[in-house]
Amino acid sequence: MEERLQKILSRYGYGSRRESEKLIQDRKVSVNGKIAELGQKADIERDAIKVGSRLLQPTQQKMIYIAFHKPRGVLSDIVKTREEKIVRDYIDIPEHIFIVGRLDKDSEGLMLLTNDGNLANILTHPRYQHEKEYQVLLNRTPDEKQLNAWRNGVVLEDGSRTGKAKIDILRIDVKGCWVNVTLKEGRKRQIRETAARIGLYVKRIIRVRISTLELGNLPKGKWRYLTEKEIKELKS
Image 1: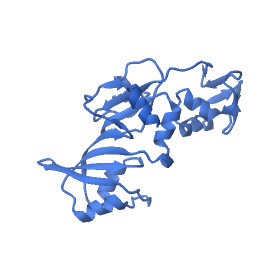
Image 2: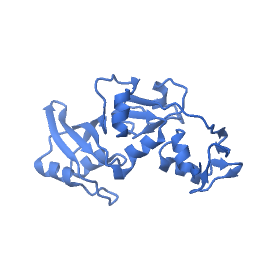
Image 3: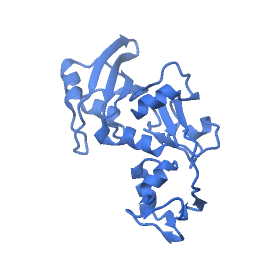
Image 4: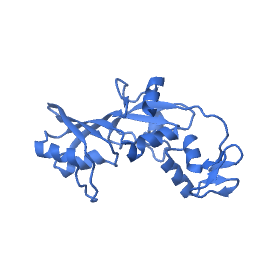
């Protein structure tokens, strides 16, 4: 049965459909020896579909779902391009997997890795409004004006406005003020830039939840396979 190429690539572990579309746009995908075009359809059972030099085989792939506790200072990369620690250095399996929801180098906490492109699309597409929850250490305690601004959305330096957020003070200690932040969007460095716009400085960010999946007591730098229950909850 014919279906769009980006859907096939996503199912075979090449990222979300948007990431798969970029592979096609970058001329890295061919069908029956010809460079593929965006919007093209193919049949995995009878067409020779290649990503680079890899031929996709019409077999049922084993779906992989992994929770990882990313340490601070680790790059959210699958392929090493420089001499720095990357996420893939910690996960010793041979299968091709990708990251759903990156964290910047200085942030830490929960990451989801999988080869299930359909799930990745559901968790990352803005229309599904999936929550991501963070514990954030600020340099000082925000006042009510700052909290309300953060909750209602802030205009960033590039002119874009953040969506509404949930934010609550967790505790105050000698290091600063810990707040709990829940977002339904995932712009690059959004928490750090939002805090800066309202006069606060972020000292530490720990992601503790992606949709229904929680970090729990998973040690820093360790990973585990998701349970069947967790997978079902994420998909629903």
